[in-house]
Image 1: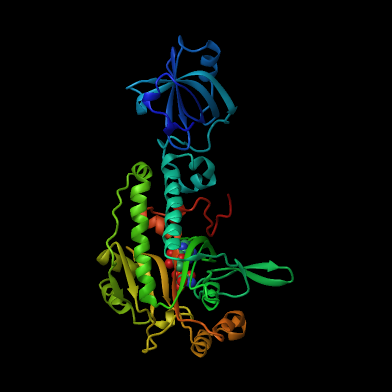
Image 2: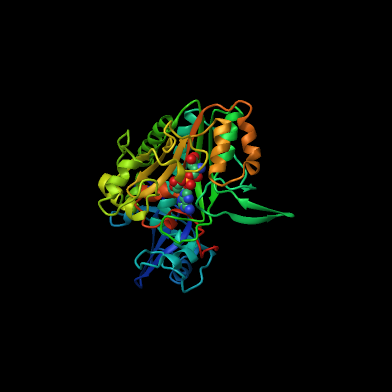
Length: 426
Ligand code: AMO
């Protein structure tokens, strides 16, 4: 049984529970064990006179964080947390824990993030930490349900590839038999090829690898991307889909993860749709309050902080200069500007997307204009010569999304086993 399956009205019933010893309080004639399982805490009460001597003596010596199995009787007790306690008949130590512990689970003592990550198995026993991943799990489930409902087909594309897709960040090279290969930065090229294949709406949730040199609170070297691509639509169409998805996920989390939001002491509200849209040109104007950004340059952290402070919440920055976006974005008639957007939350970029260039000649030109070689992209370009429909899509960073939703100060808090510039283990 799990802790949440027991209620005070089970008074008198026999139950079997298993979990970790969160705390042992020895008051001489009375011993309390706080048992922790996946769902919560249960008080095991051992009055010296009411339990067998052997059980009593063993219980007071069990080390914290040992795994135990308890068989006992439920007793209604108003003073106990949840209104009941368990009077044990037997307590079996399934596996004892060593001492001292590498990390305090009770959350009474704060620990450095590095110590926590080094001992992540123990850190994840903390209810506040595990609540984040219970919510993340529901976020993924809600995203899937929403997109399946919209007719998307879920696909898996290769993570071992021969070319780059996104400019800007570096690739991780790997040895692939006698050749060099790379870990994929994004499923971009493959999801587009699937538009030529006639799939019309595809979804992928998978890892992306970015050799970001800098350690920041917003970057991981391995992150999870929610990617969609959709035919016969434009950038506006996929922006509307994205904001509806965000609102739906928030509504689901509020409805289904109330318990975990309470543990985290977070109150969520469903964001209002449509989200504000501001063009890149007006964004640099807002940013000019803190610094001058020449038109055509990317928005740095300081600029995004100024813009984020002014607009707040979710918003889109649209109409980016073509030259700072990847080759696959479609320019407007005024080719300096592209049909691209970023979804922001405060100063953090959560997603980017665009209508794509589906015209073969224009696409080849755009690849060349970035100093890249069309021959390296032949596997991709081929799909554009035999009937590629107009299409658009986006990629949403899952950890950034969870970070924004739960107001986490560091993206590492939203990844169970994060990879960064220095961390490759656990
Ligand atoms: P982009 O490179 O902007 O776009 O990535 C999409 C989203 O992925 C997340 N992300 C990251 N999260 C954590 N750490 C990182 N190092 C990291 N890099 C990216 C961000 C970002 O907004 N192919 C396009 C998407 C598209 O146009 O469909 C792309 O990859 O949240």
